[in-house]
Length: 482
Image 1 (tube, rainbow, N blue to C red):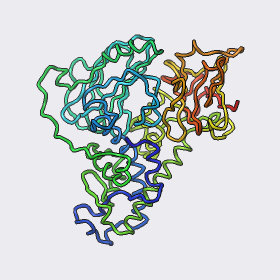
Image 2 (image 1 turned 120 degrees about the vertical axis):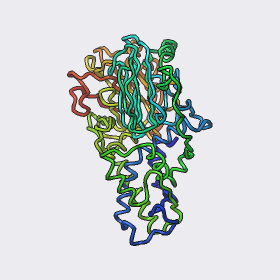
Image 3 (image 1 turned 45 degrees about the horizontal axis):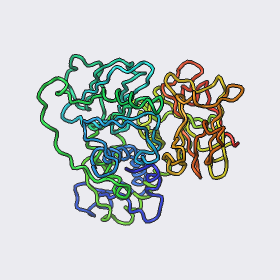
Image 4 (image 1 turned 180 degrees about the vertical axis):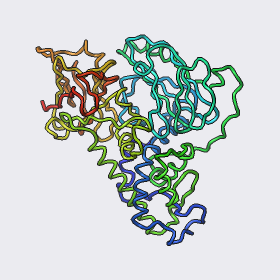
């Protein structure tokens, strides 16, 4: 799957071939007349906007391809409409999704909603255990939630339907969720209290179900949807076939009102659902305008990620994830969310302060300094569920291999952490052990650039609170050299 690092480098290096493209769909390669072209700068601008618009969609397709389509990817999980339970947390060996969450064992279900809706069933979950089911579609819109915050911990059956479904809601269904695309991802997160708790997590996971509506009703299944020839995906192919992947994905994503303008712009340079491209046949001028636009789009996304949110003691606090109404056609914001960490939660479900700098604005680097983060005794992250601080390699945004196999420190670990004399809690952020007396509070850092993410699951809404993100009354403490 295409990592965030690879996306950042899609068009930055020399020798990039660029996306294959035919400016005049329906004509033979090279047959487009100069008079029909939208013009150098206009085409450049459209390609730029198309990259920003399409980045999350193409990234999502890359994950889907590795998880569901390519059985030899090394990351394959399960076929469509089957649930995959992973009774472990992510480690440094998981490389498909940048900035992985290692707090909660995952259960994943990719849904094919073309033939019929899918019923998601959840068991009764003990009140003390947080769980969530995030419904995210091919547009990377979070179109609904099931779980502790959204629906409670009682058992229930929920219906997920595709964008064109018009049927009636069956008896026994607690709520209907509508995806904006015909393929969608369902992410189950189940809280793990400690290593000894894994068997209890397995029992909860065993109660999750993903079933076609016909199976839920005990009726004959409708005719199967047509077979799909999914194009092979890799980080190398995306460098030359970005718009091909976008085209493929768009055929399963009916145009929404807020997408009309960008879809029309893309169509004017031959980009759109079901179209085909031949970049090699284009003139040098045509190639140049597309490549410049793509490169500029990548630059804008990268800069927007770095600037997103509000600086709070060196942490960037914001929320670049939500449903279609949340984005409301702001494609740069959606691209920021995907690049910063695809499949992020809505802020009310989980808020993610993140940092690459210390409290003085200096870049965090485990090869140069040791650091600390100290929470005052009465100012731990205010949450209804739990919180964590996770360490990543600053270059790859992946978890790092370390001698104690620790990738995060979270609130379920509080009993094993040492407090200071005044009741405050200090975390030691460094590449080498801080010593036996402090190792309980050690969060191992890479021998180089550091990227840290704080996760607040189901943050409290009454003060002190991280909400609204960047403007809340609770502020994450800065990272200090020490």
